[in-house]
Length: 153
Figure (cartoon, rainbow, N blue to C red):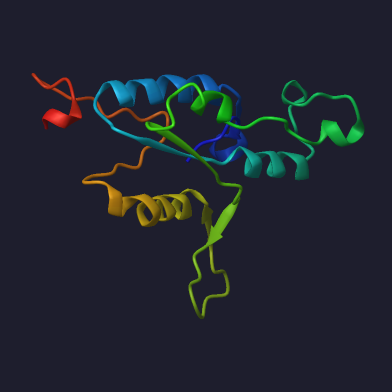
């Protein structure tokens, strides 16, 4: 679950280098033994949030009209398409939030759609694998000691 751009918690800073981070992350994980990477692309949801806040970054639009100023013309396919489809699958994931559905509560609570994306990944692709990990593109699982690949462990 990732995006070409997103806000940090607390809206302190906008992250716009999501593509560069993802490209490096995918390459690393394939090198250390992951057979396949599923990328749940949340760029469209973040674009919607920025548009509603009127905070769309002009660098990510073509800027030719008022309508275009409020549309982000980007997703992560330019990164995922660099890798063979047998190793990387991009899933468009435009959901902004998921509801915890806590019955009999005044505030059912809202969580990032990351949790729903992880559940969807396990449900869709889990039956076809021996093991699966859910990671953000700023998290690296590094084989340690004499191990150079997760396949050895």
